[in-house]
Every structure is written in C-alpha cells, then in structure tokens.
Length: 239
Image 1 (cartoon, helix red, strand yellow):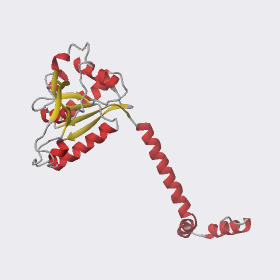
Image 2 (cartoon, one colour; image 1 turned 90 degrees about the vertical axis):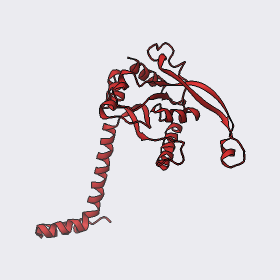
Image 3 (tube, one colour; image 1 turned 90 degrees about the horizontal axis):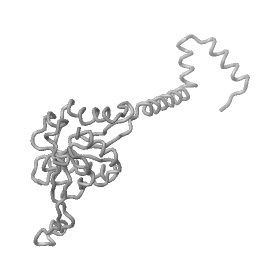
Image 4 (cartoon, helix red, strand yellow; image 1 turned 30 degrees about the horizontal axis):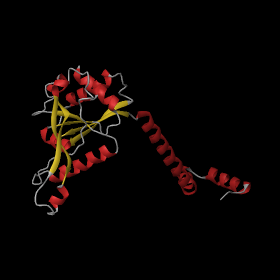
C-alpha cells in the first residue's frame, strides 16, 4: 500500500524522535519482510553466480566397479589425463562414480548395495553419462553378459600399445531369464556370442601402482556419446 506525502513525512518525523532500539523495532515491523526478501534474493543470486563461475564440464564419465583406488591413483586416472590432453582442470573434469558394487550372488551380504549400484549404473548409462568402467572380473562378466560394453577392436585400430591387452568375454544376445525366474521354463537357455570388449590393464604403468587387488579391466560403454574423448583416454593409457 502506497502512502501519501503527508503520511511519509509523519513517519519520518516519528522515526527521527526514536532512540536506537525503538528505531530498530520500527524498521523490523514495517520493513522487515521486504528486507528479508531482498537479502534472500541476493543470496540466491550470489550462489547461482558462484556455481556458474566454478562449474566444471565433464570431459568423460567413468565408474569404479568392485575396485577402489587411493588419492594418487585417482589423480593418475583423472587429473593427469586432463593435463595430458591440455584441458583446464578448473573448467573441465573426469567425473568419477566411486564405490559401485555388482554381484549376481543373491546371498551376498551386500546384495541390497549391489542392487542400488546396478540401478545407479543403469541410470547413468541410459542418461548418456557413463563412458568408461574400471572393474574386477566379476563386474566385467556382469556388464559383458548384459551387453553394456562396446567391442573394442575397431576403436583400438592402430593402437599397438593396447591391442595386446584386449580380452574377450561372453555377451548374451537373448535368453529366457524372465520365464526361468518365474518358473515358466524348466531350464535356462541363452543365445550368446564372444566379443573383445575390455582391456586387461593391470600391468599398464598408469594402473600398475594403483594398489588394485587382482586383475583390473577397462571397458567402454556401448552407447557412450563421447567416443572421441574415450579414444584420447585410451591413447593416454597407451603412453
């Protein structure tokens, strides 16, 4: 509600006659809400500006499945790749999904965690936000059978350093898993093929000292929209 000039003048005179405590109470009573709204708007504006200034775009999305790495090894997999490829680490990043666990063992203690990890992986894959996976043998078997990994022969064409590490696994083309689970089929049946869809990279310099226990495999997600960046990453590992 707008005030007339006389009312504004009267309020100004009244404000001048008040002591400090009365003046503060008066301001809070009549102007508290606008001040709060203005302060909230400034905070939101500042937070938005800060996010925009510090936001980093992902060059690649990678996941650690059934494996973990220390800080130094993680830097070798992410930060050093950015430096090698000439990217600004303040503006670009390799986004890493950590601590994911996959298992087909329904009796495993971490069965619920495995289910949640599978959902997270599927969500990232379906959203086009996953390119590379570092995994142990169990994770490799699961992702390969599910058809999530890209055959690498063509992608590695001409990469003599990595081709010797190429490894093959089973891919399920079709099966009767649903019918078998629902007891609508007496036996499980599947049509499969073998595909060269991962690299056994435990002995590569970048990964050798990472502290992995057992073999480590690198796979490329079949629907990755960033295959150019994936190729650069493979070239980085090959050096």
